[in-house]
Image (cartoon, rainbow, N blue to C red; front, side):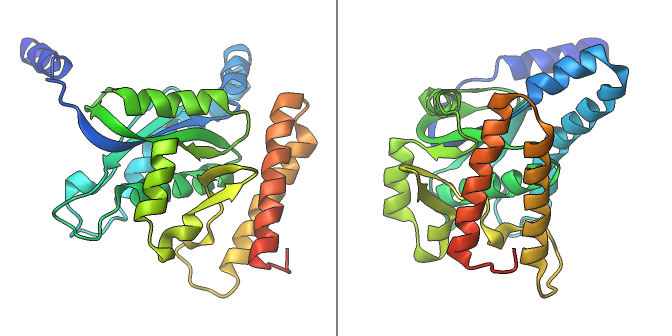
Length: 255
């Protein structure tokens, strides 16, 4: 049995690389290094690290469970997570669904992850690109992945930026009903992580958006007031300014 498992792992490791055009998102959890450093020195902080690792492992599978049963499996974004990073990819288009737009699907998933992690007290940063990539069960390689990774590593703000190729595709493919999912903010086309259409709350009660956004601003202010590292505080200040711009744009006078 052990030998059989080893052979299966070798088959997986030697899976043939087959590049295809896909949308790729690389997402990084901000503040992870500090959490790991604290957990390695203080046993009491291990629980925080364990909870975050569990969240990263379970986040996308939980979101996948909410996808309609009639959606072909290959159109649901593939994902892997490594350390503090989540990597997603999806086909650009599909003959199986005439109205399928892989970029919109991936942007939606990034919005969901933004709000899920924000509700737990974390910000994300990342990049989205298009092009050749091979996405296996446990690895991903290709120019599109490399570009998405480079975008994440080069920006200091807690946002998920679109590459030039992704920008062109967004402007060309996006229907009006999806237009609010990405915004030009401070000279950058980025995912609108605060899009209220994707609040992870199953309640249809009146005021759920305002209540949810109230919890977001409470989390933001708490981090600004309690974090002493200037680099980390800057990121929360930046996100607060983006949050306030969205409140003004949506005219949420109750916040």
